[in-house]
Amino acid sequence: MTNMDMTLAREVAAPVESAPTPRRTVIRARRGWRGIDPGELWRYRELLFFLTWRDVKVRYKQTALGAAWAILQPLMTMIVFSIFFGRLAGVSSGAIPYPLFAFAGLLPWTFFANAISGAGLSVVGSERLITKIYFPRLIIPISAVSAGLVDFLIAMGMLGVIMAWYGVVPSPAIILAPILVAGLFLGAVGVGSLLAALNVSYRDFRYVIPFMVQLWMFCTPTIYLQSDRLAESGWRFVLPLNPAYGLIKGFRASVLGGELEPYSLAVSLSVALLSFVAGILYFRRVERGFADII
Picture 1 (cartoon, rainbow, N blue to C red):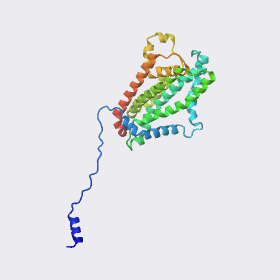
Picture 2 (cartoon, rainbow, N blue to C red):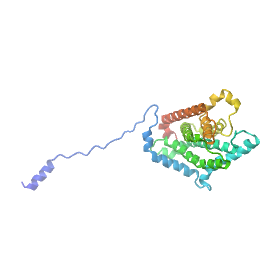
Picture 3 (cartoon, rainbow, N blue to C red):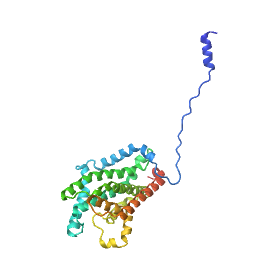
Picture 4 (tube, rainbow, N blue to C red):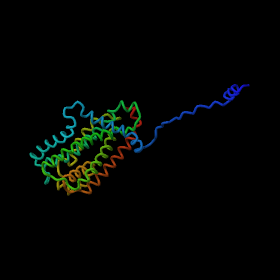
């Protein structure tokens, strides 16, 4: 037998190596209540950015003024309230000119109201995206609230212009403003996520949300001061249960100068955090059925 024959014989006799078994990933639905998975949200951070940017672009697509509408909405509302409440009704704004007083309250309120409305309708509006691919569904309401935050930051420039017009210097307490805005952001995510989940199962909420936001505004001191009679009554302990009450009132005081109420700030901020946790937990509890119901 030649050397070539011996080599062929050894190759034929050698055992054939089996192909490696492919790795399988099994996805099972979790039962019970589920909390936030920060790691998963971080992995999908680019999707959150693109969905936020999509919401911003769609909002001002084919508009003549573009992002100027972020300034015009609170500005025009301020003008209307200044005429009817500041001049005709004589609503007091303390030592601050009423237009500036109203705009400083309407600015965070507009962000809060638009964020809740946008987040509440966001899941139903993303029907095609939800039914085709998997991603953390929580990104959808968070992106809607984040888009409102972009409008808020744009409109902050107009607040600075109005303050310069009236010669009002920012208060040193302005360093607290980002914390108060963060509280409004978390509260809006919580309430918006809860409404978004409810809107999937009960489409009546598309009509409830605008009505609820309208009533909510008059329960918040955006365009009026808290009266002395109200401050002396027991309602002053109840009103801060509205998260927008203490946070918006504190935002205006921190920017324009004024007395900060520790009780209102602490209670409203705590309620905003509780709303965030409760809304997220309920959203995560029912999100597994979105693709089937929507």
